[in-house]
Image 1 (cartoon, helix red, strand yellow):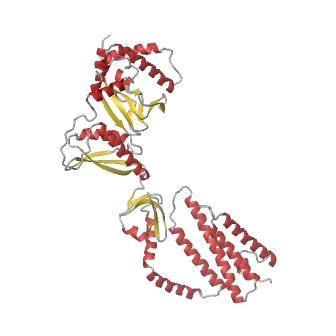
Image 2 (cartoon, one colour; image 1 turned 90 degrees about the horizontal axis):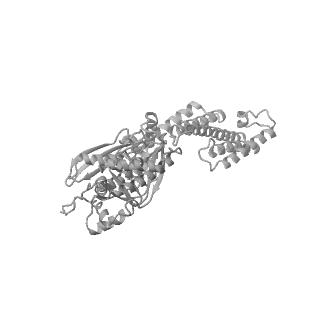
Image 3 (cartoon, one colour; image 1 turned 180 degrees about the vertical axis):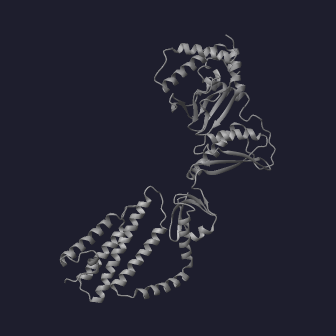
Length: 504
């Protein structure tokens, strides 16, 4: 049996001995199937199992047709089938390699062009093989194929509409794979543009297959070009001046992660409502992917900030309530006893009598901060100190090279901010809430009254401040001056007397 098969001729094996040709072909089929088995679970590889299966099947079919010695007509058909399978596998392998190279460095990839080119190549392989081995009239075949195409086109108008809409989107590029897009009903990330539909994955990880013709007809919002704008609307009480409200909101926006400073956020007093002035807060993000996290942080931090500043978010009701104007300043015997007990936790106030501590109570305010909020920022002016009642805060400072370092983590009954308040100098560190916290704020006016009634407190406070300053310097730099802590304490005593106008 020395008859050469079509595939053997195409592959250049015709010059080999019959048994050697068969052995080479069988070995090729076995290797193709083994590689296909090894690659069946690998994703995004340069070679895929279907391509190797087609190649192996083509070689195996060709070998079977040669070994079983079918009649000439059947043998030609089997040989042609082997050639078609083999070269369809080559086409599939080529398209897989092209897709692999295109996907490198990209998260998503549109497949419509690959699928259309693959279909054309498959059709070309079948047509050429049929013309070469089945001896068909190519002109008549193409004419019949044209008639069939018209009939199929009329029956599949919607499918063809999706195909041409997909081609239009691929060429005009209203969006790219990986972009966040929004339609009338859905928002999601584009995964790819296929022949019939575009794949979008929503925030809930739902995979949506939206027909291309439907996307082409709708108004489409593309969030893929940063910066991306987002906005939040909130209604606040009429009693608060809009400029003060803007200052509070602007400070909150400054500390929200992912909110860009360029372009700067915009805050508009938008409308007079029935029960509140409505404000429109517009801000920008570098990536729409973090939009939900940014809104969550903004709404959370805004609640704490508005509560601290006594800015009410009114309810849409007609109920008259009698409220005290200072929502954060509580009075009464119970509150006074509680504050005195808290103040005694401060080491430089521990030895004072209840009567002396009572001088500070009228100027004590209790505030709440949310996790991630900044209580004070390095370089800002400070007129008060804070005592931590609940939660944990982190203290950050900048070294000489400008790098930020966490200096300390403070737990309840710790205090901070006393240096700037006592000396009038800018804040020396940044303090940020790690968890939800509650703090007591004591302003400079309270200590002015205290120092005038209890001058010895100046020396005690100076010792504490000097010691803490030395500790912070050691954390930021290993190089220390030769001056001892006594010199620093004397400097602080003189500075406090100067700021509080206590004389010498």
